[in-house]
Image (cartoon, rainbow over all chains, first blue to last red; front, side, top):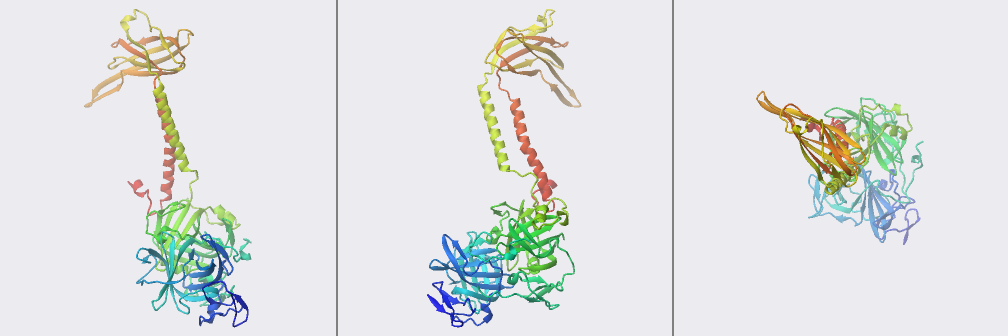
Length: 209
Length: 420
């Protein structure tokens, strides 16, 4: 299936079965009609990420190909949420300086409410599962590129909470000022313990000269 | 790929436009014009009064563990309680991520983010255990940033000063944990020698800070598999015990001669001669059990075991002494009325013993018992002693080194032990 960009007319071949937002790789404008108002949201800042659109990898024996990303800039940190085609499904790959997380189910509503949450506290993910909050930060800006599956908070200022447990489960919870919350459920990896293919390389780092 | 927006930050003080090397990752930086430390996203800035020069210049590149890192930032930090100061170098490689080189008293550690710290997702277990080992708390502290230059991927002043820092060690590894209200951060590091740091950055080792004492993560000079060492010792011990049990159970322990001697039967002769007796079973040991009923007295004799066929003789002397008394309200005694003599490797054959006694004025008799192929324990005990002495000496020496390693820690596992 393909679409022509309504702004530049370039052909775009769809990657995901559940695409929600498509940013034209040629003119960096929105092909879909999600209605994100911030023009700068499609001007992705360069952050030295070696993962790029087209990067491939394998998770649990199933290959994936990266199609797009949402980048969350926080005061003291950032999160890249890469969206990838994973067989006939979609997988989110969370990337920070400290870890990589694979999130297979899509965003889902998070039913619990937080009070006075801070890093280090246990949060209740379900009646049986508790996770330790590793990071909580307000998001200052959000950028989008490529093709991504549904993200529930376009144009909204969100806070992001990451929490994990001993079973290496990790959850990313997004909460907006109105108290609506959605989460991604996944598995946490060491940042230097995963490998991708077709990554971006940087000549200036290839020698110590 | 999307637009690669050029990240630029205007210094709030001098208005110089800085283009950070770390691009969008850079959250804090010092202005290249006026050295103001500022965080463009939060508007926080700080002008450090100290001026420090890093030994690894900002922008220097070095290869550690096969990864080409660039020195992005440099900071000087001070622990709040004991006020000791150390330097930190913030390193980056796009493919491998961030890393740190820390140096205190000329001793270096190389650290990388470690998302699997048990405290990051579980309870505060006192001895976090990971693949590299079981770690013990060495330091818990608050810290202050005295100086920073270059670029950082977080506000290091805020992150450092708002956090409680925990350092666990299992040399050569170090596991750190930083806890503040917004982030839990953990790093796993390893001691790196000044020579390796100099080599990584193609520098002369003499340009690095002089090493003062042993680093708290520095491995001991001996490095071998202690588990294998203990296993070999244990196996040798078991084999030795089994061998001794085998030898003991297979020894004949045969009584071959027993005699009582009285000075009155000498009839002017100077020696006693025993009847002939047989020593059988090839080359075996012979034990002499000697006794004399001495009381505050002595008995001395020279013994000559003679092979009747070859004439070969085996000579030894023995003195039996036994004294006792009562002095200053206490009884005392020394010596014994019995003694043992042992001859190893005596060939089989017919033997007799010539005994040349020296009697005192009060004692006139003695007894001799000869046993063949007796179980022998002294070599066994000496071997066991030496076998255990080696690991005991090793662990005593290691203990001393470890006590010294933990000398500066409030959490030394040796402190109370050595203080008592």
